[in-house]
Amino acid sequence: MSQNLDTLYSEAFQWFVSFRNMQTEFDVLTRQEIISYLGSCLNYINEILLEENSENEMYITAISFLKQQLLNNISLMEKLINKCVVKKAKIRINIDRPTENIKQDNEYSKLRSSVENTQIIPRTKGLCDIAGLDNVKDILRTFFISPIKQPQLYKHLKYCNCLLLFGPPGTGKTRLVDALAAETGAIFLSVTASSILSKYIGESEKMLRSLFQYIHDNDRQTILFIDEIDGLCRQRMQDETDHSRRLKTEFMCQISTFEASRKGYLVCATNCPWELDTAFIRRFHKRLYVPLPNEQERYNLLKLYTDNTPLETTHECWEPILRGTEGYSASDIVQLVQHALTIPIIQLQQNKVWKFCDHYYEALSSRDSFDGTYTIHFADFNNLPPNSVKARNSTINDLIEALKEVKKTVGDEEVQKYHCYVNNY
Image (cartoon, rainbow, N blue to C red; front, side):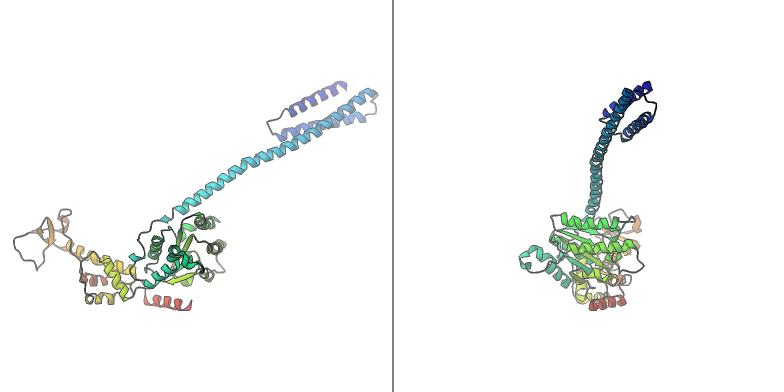
């Protein structure tokens, strides 16, 4: 019995010493195993103390002392374990927190990079490059350009920084925003619904928040332009998905907080304003209808796009063109002029008789008289040397001919629908 107790005490003492030497390893499981072993030692000692045949009083006293020592050691070990657990938890927090910050920083950097990739350079010098739309341009100058250039005039007026442009396709809504960015010298962020929407839940809302946060954090004036906004904020329906509803709610909340910002503009454009949610429309300070060009504006557009082409300059010769282009948008007129400019090239490709003069081949017409200043060649257009054919200027007749091919893209019924919407809202 004595030998067993001596061995027991010796092993328990060695375990305790090894326990105290664990200063760098926070192995809580091993320490708990030691306490479990010392607990079994206590059970063994209690069994000895309960034996009735224990006759040696000094022996019993020694065993009791050993029991007390083990109890003290177990209590001390438990305190050390608790201290180690707390210390380990603090270390884990200190280790995890920077990692979490790194993840957040990486996510923020990724979103900010996505926002910066939407920045484009204005392609116009300003509103002076846009023909027609005089009423729309006057409103833009009054509410969005002058407050930046002459802020002292708007001290007692509410700041207007949310604009909705709507109208038929091709009337110049995007070009107006481009000119607005050029006039104000602002950073121009141009996004579409596809660059915001994501298949992952919550990512679309993050991208939307990042766009507005970028404007808040930026010291420069910034224009956020979202084209085809009806792809994001259609009228809310009962059967729509939770993701779509959350995105609309987030968008409207961001606009509400954006109203107090004086460093940026939100400009949205749509061809279908009647499909937008009414709560979304209400958040815009200005809603501008960009109509189809009238007769004078069509004339200005035609003169602008044919500026480098010598044509008849009298207004009477333009009458057939102006009548034929009624209901055409600015985009339709651009396409019309481009098609008219290709008609001479098509005619040249069909020509087979050429006069060669001043190092260029020119189509021979019946009005040309042979005076010996040029030579005549018979050849297909494709067989002539490169850069050797002289260009032929376009005429008014080419524009009239192009009218047969280029049709207006907006029907009369759709135009009437816009007029009804303008009168109702």
